[in-house]
Image (cartoon, rainbow, N blue to C red; front, side, top):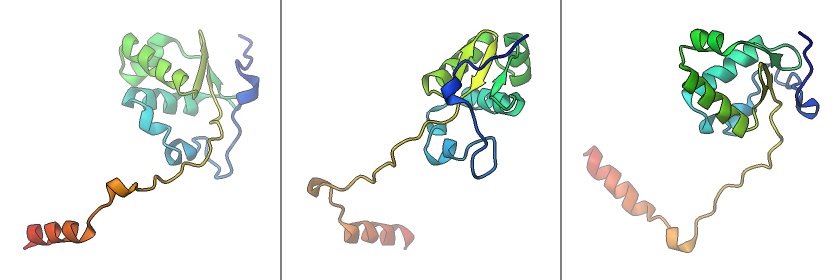
Amino acid sequence: MDKHPISLSRQRRVPKQFSWVDQRLVRERYIDHLSHEACALYLFLVTVADAQGLSYYAERTLCQRLSMSRAQLGQARQRLITHQLLAYRQPLYQVLALERRAPTQVPTLEPDNDVDLQAVFEQIWEVLK
């Protein structure tokens, strides 16, 4: 079978930290939006993919290897596609490069949300007594 990337513009490259699993997956909180099944599928595909991020495993094989039902696999795959971590054209999977995200800003407290630190510490002190 001839394999050709589904998305040429999003081919994976080895990140600077020298790991196929880009650390931004955690740092930029992509992983926070994934189910355990989606994480398992992502890790499996990252592990077996070639240098272009391509692999093709049959649903049956993936279900067996990952101990998932077909429905769970479908949901995991869709979640990865939704979060732009994966492209899929049956039977070909492509693990995508993570998009560059704008740095997240730390929320500032509004005057209505001020916290009385003295009261917080007094409550902690009461609990510790």
